[in-house]
Image (cartoon, rainbow, N blue to C red; front, side, top):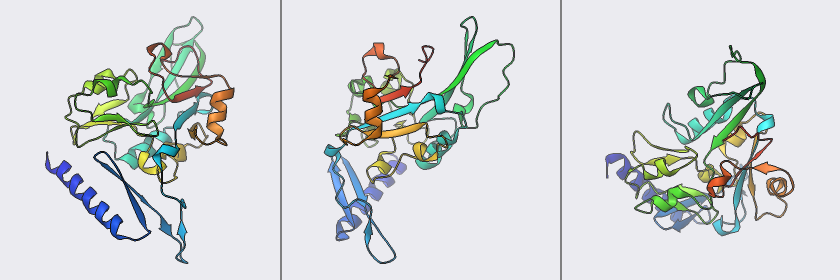
Length: 265
């Protein structure tokens, strides 16, 4: 274990002890080797804000919805993810691809710097018929090959259906990186462990939006909860024409697209 990982363990233990000692202020939920710390906040009058009950992972089942017709390729989501999750430069937990289709059906697909800084609006030498942007991220599949191929059980599914990585178990073998058909994983250059989009698990377990959802100026991205009978996203998925990436692979993704096109893959 390197110094960075040792410091992470020490920090987690410290936070867990601090949370346990603060009566009514925090709750520690232990899942395997992972401790989730839920903390409420106090208003100026000293009244607690945030969820009235402790977060129960068994009462949620998350899904993600992306409306391609609304995306303008501004890159705000990519930058927000980078800041929130301390993503190293030239690596991406979420990114944007631009699809440009010619009259003859030829495709031009690019994603300069993951779409972080937007796109050059000028494309020469191409007879454009249609063009659109496609945000991508981890699909948190039901039948995911990354979990199946991990030799040490570092990749796992949470009770809410999210695919996560236990960095303390990960040996950086990159099997999961190679197994992911969506290109959503990478080996972190500093920790040397697998890294990926978690749908901001540290935020949604506190009742907050993911960083990318909060940053999008057009409402392209939405996180839903199928166990909430009033959930807007779940209703859209159930009643409208939505698509998933690479359905032929039978990974059963939990990321759905509105307004998708046959060229998207």
